Length: 107
Image (cartoon, rainbow, N blue to C red; front, side, top):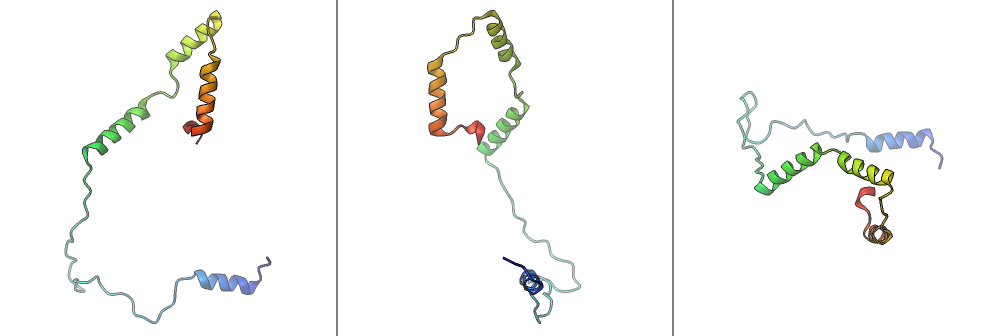
């Protein structure tokens, strides 16, 4: 598709604010020009106990380290000692489960 100057003008007109012959909007309903605005009711939000517990749990999770150093050290020691045993059935089961259900760590 080739864009010509005429097309550019049309696009600008399409996406420009609409031109109207109406006067500008006055003050909101119930307000009088020259008088201070009256305080209006404010929207409020109330969080229930479950929301507060969820926020606490999220903060706790944020403070946890990404790598569990003690587990890594134990695995390294097992590998170096030659005592680390791979369990092929568990590996296969997890691969199949992740393939069927989707691995949340890769989404």
